[in-house]
Amino acid sequence: MNSRVFRLTLPILFGYLPLGMAFGVLFTTQLDYAWWAAPLMGVLIYAGAGQILAVSLLAASAGLLEVFIAMFVLNARHLFYGLSLLGQFRGAGWRKLYLIFGLTDETYSLLTSRSRSQDTMHELDVDFRITAFNQFYWVIGCTLGALLGRSVAFDSTGIEFALVALFIVLTIEQLKALGDAFPVWAGAAAAGVAMVLLPPAHQLIGAIAIVTAVLLLQYRNLRARTAAEESSRV
Amino acid sequence: MSDTAYLFAFIAVAAVATFATRIIPFLFFERHTEHPLVKHLGRYLPAAVMALLATVFLQRSADWSAPLPGFDAVFAGVLVVIIHLWRRNALLSIAAGTAAYMLIRQTGILESGLAG
Image 1 (cartoon, chains in turn blue, purple):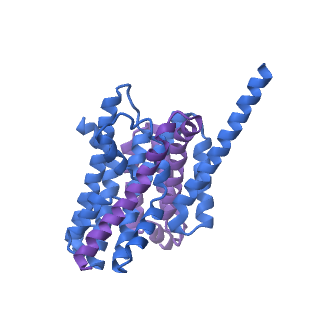
Image 2: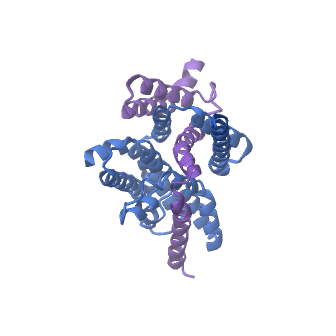
Image 3: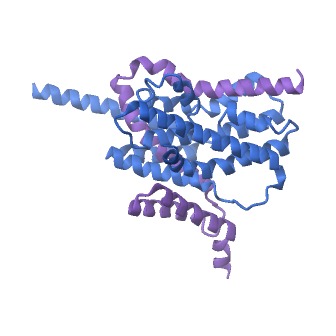
């Protein structure tokens, strides 16, 4: 099973290793703290953009309330992710807290897109391993970056495109599984609107808020139509 | 507060704030899993989120000041779509798109091609 999980998470390895290293390099070159704090943050916080923001907050010796608010706002898009996984994580027992803790953009994408068998316990075990593998890649990246610092020599420029490619592939897979293109176009359009109207730091949460509002309207219209059909049938 | 104490307090606060964003939906909606609205969002939100993540990160990985603005990321992105529709092999599509993007970025093939 581990080799299947490794294959599923390979694109994330290509994304998390260089991005984790970027964070680690930033951490050691910008701050005076011991190198091991970088992997420790990868273990305990585990958020890509969040940890990079954390470097500038640490550099500014930001107040702890400010830290809480900044990290919460930056990661607020995760508030919407759990909605799709309420049923899926049911019955996960002790694994559930870790599954929730590890819900990054990329892990959420894999867990909601992959095909699942009827064997719920087995699939939850696969979900758990996917989450753990992904965090492992991230922590390795943070460690390497923090240890190597500026001496990172190999030219991996552009390898982080693997995550963009992963999101594209998963969009196609979602489209095929749903058989309905509406949410895909709505998501892309919401991203376009958010990118035009909002500064980069708020674009993701802005786009998710817009598309959630659109889906709520769609839900209301569907309900109204079903109700109208039922009453016309009577 | 000493430096080390501040660092530990910082990491603890940042960890709690991040975890809070991930667990809140489970705390507030757990009892409403069967509600049609929650089911509707649960069904359609992943596709919408995937499309918006792809759009935002594609735009961010593009070089908009190149001679052909955004061509690096758009070309690699279109390549991913074509190869994925053709073979439907996730790793192949991702590897091909990433390799194309890295090649364009590292060789500056676009600029030299236009200049030469």
